[in-house]
Image (cartoon, rainbow over all chains, first blue to last red; front, side, top):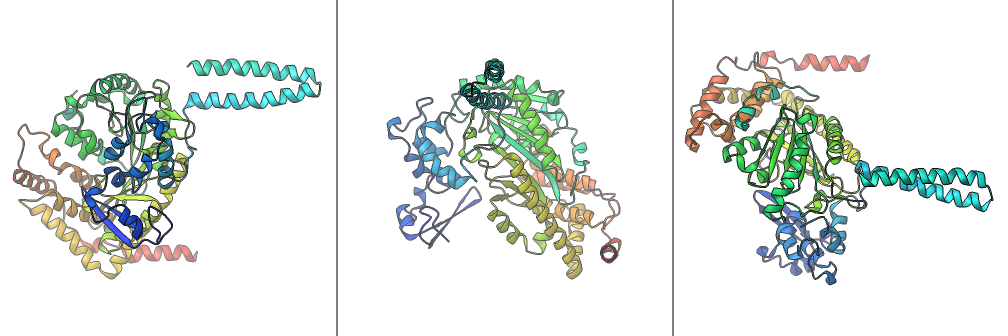
Length: 169
Length: 373
């Protein structure tokens, strides 16, 4: 069994904490256990307990230029340590660096592949179609097939109008 | 309409049938959604929460499914009413602690429930009896698509739906089923099953969700990962695992009947005896005994006991439900008296379990014959 934090050394310290009747098990190597002050369980932050060990450390790695606070809502990584939750959608950008490692261990992947809001999906579809047609248009012009190129141009203009409509909504 | 009045017609909900209802008590799918450009409820100021509630609530109420439903703000509900909603699995304990700036919208059939300003701006949930995760996902997907026409969600093309807690990020989906596993508990296999399920990245919890005990041999299984997989993949994966747990539970029940039939009959007979003759009984003991009554129903050794009565009592004997129709608050001792009285009354006409009704050998021969054919 590998250490939950460094993921490289063998875990020899096994720590169990019960919070509100819920059991949290943690397996660490000797070095990481000492680093986390495992002999002082009160030193654990709630974020670590809620989300998993290393969460509060990870978020501190975030961009130091942001002053550790989200410019949009004023949320700080200390707040995250306390609550295990973020302040606003923009926090995901503010704390992006730190969150990345956390998300990797927490989820199957770091890229969303599920449902996309309908309006967004439409505009996405339109954008992809337009991009494809623009390539085709360039090719047609290059080959001096102007009749074909004109058809592509009209289609592109049509799609662009549609895209505008969707975006407005 | 008062929530009390609204919830006073529960029995229909318990009469519902669904696939594998003998083991899967209910299926649930929940989506977490947030408004774009606004702080999450936990970090928002009270005035911001009140404003977002004002924005969200009419849009939810306007969905056709929610017609003739119940809708209110949390500060309008007293603690007893909130507790009743928790006992019905309609709101979380966290939501019950909310006041001004949070709300609930519930449909008439009490199987679609939207929590406003819990951890996220919106928590949409759909409940179905038995194993119906795919159906629940289909319904909630349509509801969500409907809502998104009116509300601008916070969505990132890489991270998906942005949620207050990174554990819900991406799809924002939590798929869960409530399982009744007396066979696995009695045969002491349940811990093995739980650890196997945990290894597959799924969580197993007690009857009232996070941090609750597995009372009445009821367990909740749910996904933990929400990012990097499609909703369908998540639903399919948990569905497969549930099918296996169902199989294990069925095998455990069969094996128990073969090897320790008297122990099984003893548990059921004892549960019947205690529940129909007690004068003081706690809610914990009641749930654990009701579990064996339900097992008795599944084994068909009761002549005139319906599963719906057992399932109804699972909820009706909970502390807040006992007090729902009373104006005064009862002490724990008074509740234990009242609970026993209700149980005696409900089980009055129920015949004792009779193991001779059981026909395990016959059914086994049947399956063997089928295989031979």
